[in-house]
Image 1 (tube, helix red, strand yellow):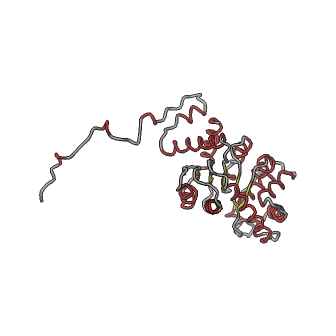
Image 2: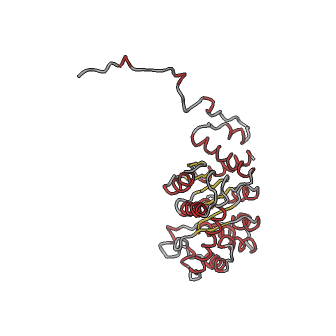
Amino acid sequence: MKELDISKLRTYSLKDRASKVQIDDFSRPHRKGASFKEFFSSLPKILAAKGIQDVAAAVVQARKDNKPVMLGMGAHSIKVGLSPVIIDLMESGMITSLSLNGAGIIHDFELAFIGQTSEDVDKEILSGAFGMAEETGAMLNQAIRSASAGGIGEAVGKLIDDGAFPYKEKSLLAAGARLGIPVTVHIAIGTDIIHMHPSFDGQATGAAAQKDFVRFCSLVSELEGGVYINLGSAVLLPEIFLKAVTLCRNLGHTLQHFTTVNMDFIQHYRPSTNVVRRPTLEGGRGFAITGHHEIMFPLLAAAIKDLD
């Protein structure tokens, strides 16, 4: 066997090579007593750190241009205590619409009603008591049965905002009603505890959910130049967002240059595909920010406020 003559390898100067990492993009050590703005700007301009910086900038720019910033979210984001941060962004005009799954209205309602939520499922399912809280089922199902053209989100928001709920200031749905910000709710029948209650009306719930879907599509139709954030919904909201995007494009709406973001502690197939990649194939940008909701979303919110 003839050995290769490696002395004939062609090389080039390192100075002539294009490189993906620049020393100017490195982080800076945190200085004791420094502001949040200084800390955030000290993060490396590399990978996810640059991603969250770009997302914050996209949100601020969208609002400066009077473009929407839509937040779709799973219920876990409520259970880890993010409602005050989200409400603050709604009040400051940084979030222009909110979309929840069915579990979202349950945790939001219970927190507004008694200041606590999230039962011990492992314990309660053994006796058949899981999901059987009377007020949660009766009051939410009654609100949904009485839903008008606004759908589930508007009906439950009005219930909480108008009612004697001692902790309503922590309610996302009440904030939407109070501020006039659209809140839509998207369900899969059988997935939520209130569907087990005798007060559940499938026909009324389906009709109200359909109104929310149409309203959601109307919001997506104006997303050009805006931002859509998916916070912790692994299946339902990503699927609904993708359907809304294609419906709006089918009707002739321009949806080409906008920013999408998936924030979760695990990157799942559907949000990665249906939020980050597919909707932005023609243009725009998609970001995947990985980390615990209770850390990453307050970090993003603080960055948005400091950039504004």
